[in-house]
Image 1: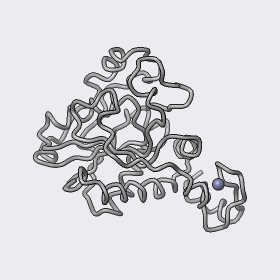
Image 2 (image 1 turned 135 degrees about the vertical axis):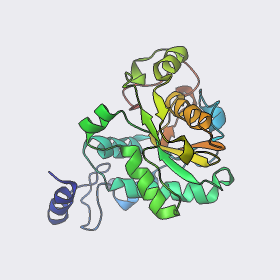
Image 3 (image 1 turned 180 degrees about the vertical axis):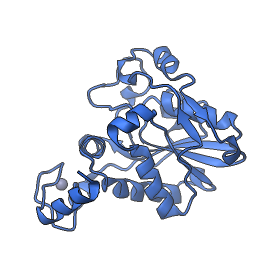
Image 4 (image 1 turned 90 degrees about the vertical axis):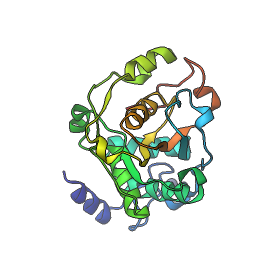
Length: 241
Ligand SMILES: [Zn+2]
């Protein structure tokens, strides 16, 4: 079923909020305004709080990853709640306007999915958010200057930091380095957890000639303990790519 048909059906047959289950008014989709307002904002530079960030000049997120955001991201990725991309991008546009570390951003690059995974899912969720963000900010979007050349196993199966780093080593390849030279690149993703995948992508982008590389995700874990220890990440709650 096409996304638009899905949206059309939803318009005529109103649904409930995915988080609080109250009936949504016809002009709202997936997440009610009240639940949107209850999302916990996270806007300061979190670079010091992710385990792998050597290749990143900054790490920013729109929200902390608690129950409402978890439900929203889950529906976004697995129930094709694609209009949530606009809500997420609105928040990321606010972060881009308010954070000094993001001033001067000149290129938005969504974290690439491996082609097999993209085909299975039907879309790259990071690319949908980045496209909306580009529309809102006017910053150029480049979806194909970097590709994912290895379909690595999920980071959730990795037990140690060294395993996670090894699992993502050389999984990205820059295919159009000319588009990155001298740019301040913002890599966009839905979630950042240990930072290993994002950092590996940033390393490739930096090696290709980008001047600065900054991570920007919709969500990040709420608990400090999810970040710096090897085994504390709750794999049932954190959906790695
Ligand atoms: Zn709600």
